[in-house]
Length: 435
Image (cartoon, rainbow, N blue to C red):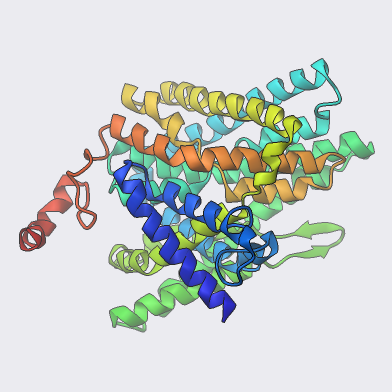
């Protein structure tokens, strides 16, 4: 009973806050996060009223399955952007940009934090510095996708952005696994090529294979149904199945085998959209079904942010360095890689700004890092940066897309009408009825 009340309050609170955000011209994502902060254990939850907000972080974590499900559907949706026609047009550019901007960001943050270490070794260890550099590469696909959806963003940069965000997660996984392996070597003195090289590669390969198999299976089952509602139900069931399978972990011969939830679901969506001729129509229906799930995801993300870290000067100092140099890395990494691939000036100037949001993937990495000597400091730094990036990032993404001319000015776009001029033709009749 209590869980149902909490879920309903999260939904109502997030949606009501989005009305206020609209008056301030802020993205709905920011409103959901703020609603989560208010309902969390450091605001309304601190009153101790059962069912009204979350009294402890443990109560928020108990609903983690909802966040996992939302991330799975977000990854599945992004995977549907990898259509062959689109990949032929800008696939090579997306791969180059996705890899280079992540690597450049990691290098810049590594250098900045290592300099901080050499100035005062007590502030941060070498192992934590290089691990934080790898975490800096991760970009939150959820916030980016929600801004694109809310404002019906459409154009070359939007298409490139969704591809780059997807590739960024795969690159970030490799960088983090390698950096974390090196960090453990520094602390223990034992070199393990299995941890640094073999396990990350195995995880990516297994994730791609599993996602491909499930994507083909989804298409095979869909062919037995013709009803829209049944096809929608099968699609939702398969995404849940994919999320569940991606959580399987086991060890064999001393090697850890696991999957990346984001990569598995992305690959499932990619394979499905390229073999299924009715995938676009089906995705439109899935988008409508997942809307409340995404609201819950961001409200819970906001409630999970630990405001106590703001009282720690050490975390604030390292966090400020991390945020400044990660932002520089993302911007100049994207700018230089876009220049290298001969993207337009508009894309060069704006793409890096849209890559700033950071959330779930980075927090997952930070949990792993707690095995290090000062891993708790790393986790708090990431929590602080997520607090800043999630509140500011969506608004910056919106501004960058407006600057690129891929979001119509406020008040010009109906929430039901695509921003794409070609698609708007199909909504003219509906718009007239509404007027």
